[in-house]
Image (cartoon, rainbow, N blue to C red; front, top):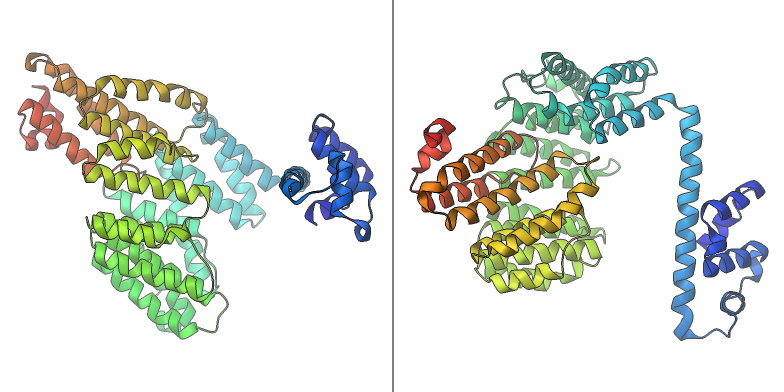
Length: 493
């Protein structure tokens, strides 16, 4: 029994501390379970006696759920307590880790001036301690913060230096044929290569220049092509992933071969999706799903992305059939929420707005970004229904949500907040005389300019949705589309 083992791993001092920290004395059931497990030897544990000790009545199967829930809540409190205790030990003995969390705190609180001053100290301490894991995470923090520094030459140079370090790390890993390379490194490659074209302040670091690929092991070649593919676009990236797959298939006896094979398939699926090849995307996700099935595993995100590719292909009848057939993949609350959001999206595309309202009325989303995505779809639905009062109501309902997270908002929160305001202005545009359009259009275009700048840093900016906004402005104002998409001066004039 997990709770029993955790309790008896605590010292006398820790037992007293746990009771105080978890406030067990104020939680009658949890405290009774705790006292019973604490005083009862393992070989004398008895469910009937535990039930009587906790609830003061004879055990019954109907009430067993109460005891199981009580044990789970106690186990969760013990788990949190042990995590906190271990974290205290780690902080006391690992300055690098402690400094890293200090940087994360500065980032989350948007204290960017302090972050700029402190990051180099943390990085140098980690470097002198040969803590590459901490170095990578410092780089990642600075990369995610770079939007706020896009006009700061000193910070741009700092990030450029970090990108050079990433390339050096990758060289070292590939040359010695290690079987692990941090996803953070790959994400930094992607960030640099994909975004630098639109942000010329960042100089792209060229593809890895290992002189003699043939000197590498098959696994080294696999890693080399996996690294290269992130510098490339579209068909070139697919070709590189195919080469990586060729070499990983020569290493079938290595540990976690199936993980590496699946990572190639998933990356290929994402690339196909990004370039609009939805049928090929579906085929790749089905391959990834088959690998999981062979190992008796499930990953609802693979099935979700497979269904998303069907939606991208506008095969809505096939979507409904596949969603019904694969319901068992969406067992958790989180998975069901994402599936329901996808169903609402399909109803929206099919013009079934009442069904959208019904689903989203019961599926707000426990995940922040899912919640915001659902709200955005809800506001778009009210826009289609010409319902400005409901749009205002939903936006006002979100004010408290944004206020509660004002200290820790990422760029994604601001992006959704901007979308909300765009639809509020668009609905006003519908019902406003043409001679009063000027200020509304200026505000919409300013919001769109922010989204276009943010597109480089977040997947939540949908270029197709921006095109729809331009189409709506064109429909209600008569402004040519080319003027809307090529610059503000023509629009403002």
